Length: 349
Ligand code: BGC
Image (cartoon, rainbow, N blue to C red; front, side):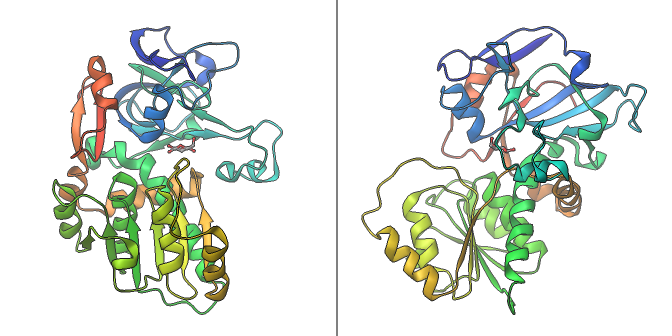
């Protein structure tokens, strides 16, 4: 079969190449790939900035936002041939730490977790892949190719779950939420905000392209100014840019008792506007919680499935702005100005 592979930490090594069929030790369920989403993490791995191959190997099969069709359910699963499934990304550490021991691998405490297509286990950008039945999530068949949005939805489902568990520390009636960044994560976070009945605002630097209209079609308000120029104090900010200045302004502009949830992974950046202690002082004086969140466990995967199943299909389909063939994976990894989610399609749905 063919797979998109890379030698992690070595830029320019990604290839669509012949690769051995998936090993039966990777799981008893055999799946034919339908589509795989591309995200910033994949781009970082291809650029040689992130990623780890399986132990004893040099190359890693890329891809963690999967969608596939079961072609052999094996003997030990309730799945059937033809079922559409998505693979859970993370596996618990082998120790295991207390969180992994109770199934909260997203909260792994010792960093020895593994992740498909990212850290030490092959991903899903191959014509066929295998998975353990307990890590295969069946998706609503009416979603079709939109099922590929499940993994990014799990990430924001967890983010929202943690925001809510922080919120209930006190008397809490959130009304307004600001999402910074109108990429797939931001737009899916906004979708959840709407499903929760909140007044949703999305901020992004783009003034043209599909994003403003997609936000409006959700019934949310689009802004292309800075957070401090918004003119109101959101009760919740879901930060999806990873940009230093957006983060520090978010902490300073959120309402008293507000929550800033960081989901973006940024690097470096100098902020000459606000020193760390000044940002921290406003967090202290306004009882603000700033939390970081990554990955998702099974309860978030389950909820994310419900969120997608409830969402308007036409709106969801606008998030997939480009579909590329596996041969064109290099183009799929390039970020074009109007891209939201780029998907590599391996087979017809
Ligand atoms: C993935 C997560 C993963 C994280 C860190 C993200 O792109 O969606 O599942 O935990 O990268 O590796």
